[in-house]
Image (cartoon, rainbow, N blue to C red; front, side, top):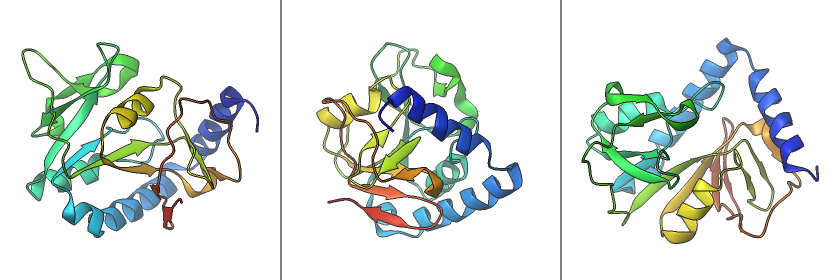
Length: 186
């Protein structure tokens, strides 16, 4: 694949083609793996996207992290910049930019204590070098370039490729989780 738009369409098509029943099982497996790993247990805070559509589900993970007493923050991109805001419940979220569930920021200060944070990043696709295919806004690339966090991309196993097209500003991922395995990129 040499065209990012075509790669995005392909990955979305593959992801959308997974039945709801299979998706539920794959998501349960990913959530259980994530909750039982050292990255999670050692994380001081969790920065995570809130899944929509056929994305790997993060809602059960978020609820478990909140039950475990973790600080959880979700992104808000309404200002054109991705800022994270702490939440106490998924019930406090409403659709924001791109229809992504987000927290109302009325007078709230963004979450800024990224020391020891685990940042769960959405990935339409990944290649074997750790290049992540996102949705094209560059929000996570800019955030990861500016902050030292442990980034973990969540991706469907069937959307791992030998090569994906990249741009100079794209930030490589060093860790990924699929429904089958953790992947460590050099």
